[in-house]
Length: 260
Image 1: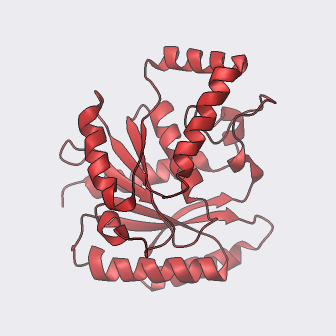
Image 2 (image 1 turned 90 degrees about the vertical axis):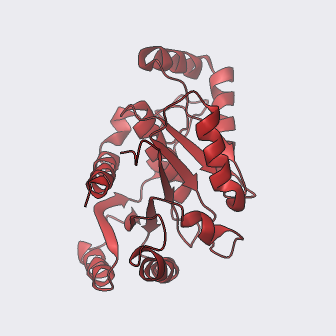
């Protein structure tokens, strides 16, 4: 999935908080790194909370303090013969510089660098940094405020920058997240048709609203879904549609990487 032997820059970005961009960044990165044998890194530029870095610190503490997770990590890294992927923090203005520093500093042939972007384009340097992404995935939910803010940004960025090829970005894809399975699929079908009519791309995969997406390491030793050290537990993958998301994401990127 590389471009000219250089790692791809990919961001999960949305203009509204609480739609799952950070969770999807971590889940996707861990899935590709630990299960698909890609080499990834994450630039956490969602200042000042740096949620991905905080998650990594929690994960490391659990592995160090809990023998169960410590043994699990030991077995995993022995079997995979690879270490945890690096995470670096940066302001959004310095994110690209930090990414290149990561690429040059680690003895790793990176395939993808993920960026956890701030939730607003008003952040200084946001447009300049998002313009350096090869692919942007924007999670949305069937909430009017979420849809309006994200569609407004996506349409403007697509029309002003991507279509005229003013930026590096090859494609921006919207992604249904937090889907209430009790609601009629007609609602999402209608929204999807509207999104396609205004010229935007949207993935077919729809991720359900389920508590498992928030399950991290804990003293209870439950199966893990969201972690920077472990991939999604195999049992928890069932019904989460994460496998379908990863397959579709990889397919879109691979197809777009083919020479025109």
